[in-house]
Length: 88
Image (cartoon, rainbow, N blue to C red; front, side, top):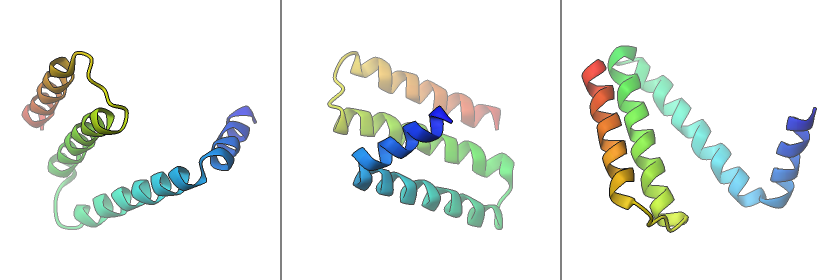
């Protein structure tokens, strides 16, 4: 399929970043599954999602040099994290 071909082309163009992304993604899932042995999903999943959102915003500022409307990005992330925590 076309999606599979695009993924293969991405691996060929950026093998190091693809490998790093795959390893960190696998590591995060393994960590989450191990954490599920000790805690409940209703507590752990919102924490996991909040951390993922915060890391995404921070990496976009650091790696992509995002500086446009920076306060809005951090405010949006903070409001989302608060909402996730309140709903759990």
